[in-house]
Image 1 (cartoon, rainbow, N blue to C red):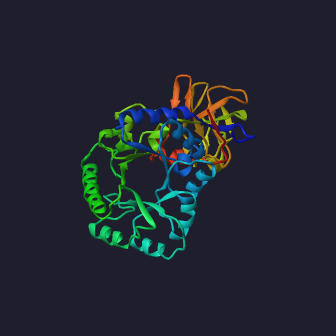
Image 2 (cartoon, one colour):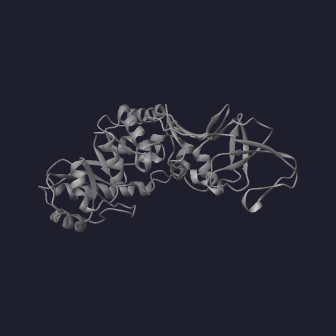
Image 3 (cartoon, one colour):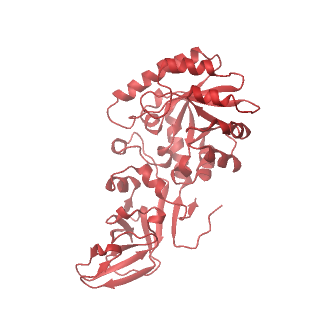
Length: 371
């Protein structure tokens, strides 16, 4: 369902682009390798439920999220495919996970000890996380694994997956990636020696699955690449295969004025007109995710680049126009107009961050429209 909005600002999500990116990856993966579509953080700002349904239709076999809340939301939307929570979840929520058939990530012996005190019926499906060099979550040593497996109640907890996360798969230098892959293989053998049932293995994030499709295991976790965004500047330059960006951000000019030389704009009066200038006001601001440091970045109007001037306000910002335009003229912050395009990668580069962060900045004040 499209979100009803009364403001002249919106995000368009091209679900066909998301599906095309999944099809592209699927063609390169082994026929035995399946895809977790990663829809955490509201689908990287694109919309979790809508993206999840499109991804499943395109061939994704399962979904991955960061939070239990995100997983429950997907279940309540009627989504039935397997869902894995990648982050830590308190043992007290095991009954909720079982009720909604949600797989949890587990990697602490102490977690199992606490979980045994929880009164629940049924079997909890878990994926074990191994830390092979990311240094974030997971078991790092063989001894940790032995202690974990000794604590495991195999009648109440069923291991359905085993995974790790690569720290440098998106960089030109492959040695650390290879080191992590080797370490995963070593630790996985320890887990398998302690557990008789089959376990699905997944190591590949977007970068690894795009660059090394023949090295992927039972599953890959397709996140940023699914949205048509490259995981790093290196991969944007090398482009193992073309991705189609799914998100564009637009608004309409709501006011146009001519200012005299020496006139100042916005909070702090940081911008001074050097000559007579036409200024347009746009109804997007930092409450929408257009941060104050976007000042000076370009937007597209009539297929031409024009700079944002003056400090970004909470609800509005201003653009220096090359001529007067009528109220209602479309402004594109991200996307194409005629022969020009502004990408999330370009914005991220100018702001010295990554495209992941920019996509996640756009708040729910901006309605998303899907096609």
